[in-house]
Image 1 (cartoon, rainbow, N blue to C red):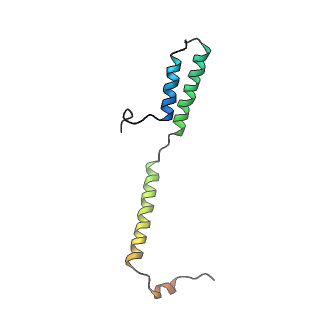
Image 2 (cartoon, one colour):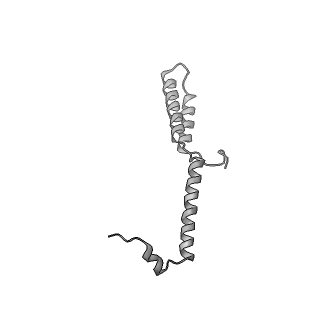
Image 3 (spheres, one colour):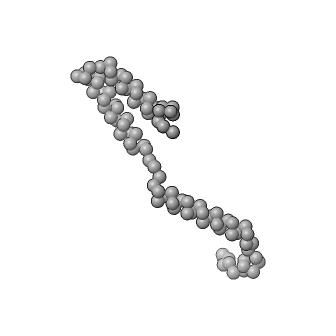
Length: 92
């Protein structure tokens, strides 16, 4: 979905608020510098909070889920018989 169609996040609302406030102050004022530093801090926070899952991780998770599904399907189709249970090592 394009960013202009979705509702703005709290982060975007705060950034927009700071930019509107920035228009009310002259470039050489102390308040202007303070607002700019807040905007810079918020922008660095955004870059640190955005995280995505790598393709390698997705492939590993998908493969693990496939293996689990295959094991469950095999156990459902092929019932373990009493003879096979005797071959399993029992704890002492």
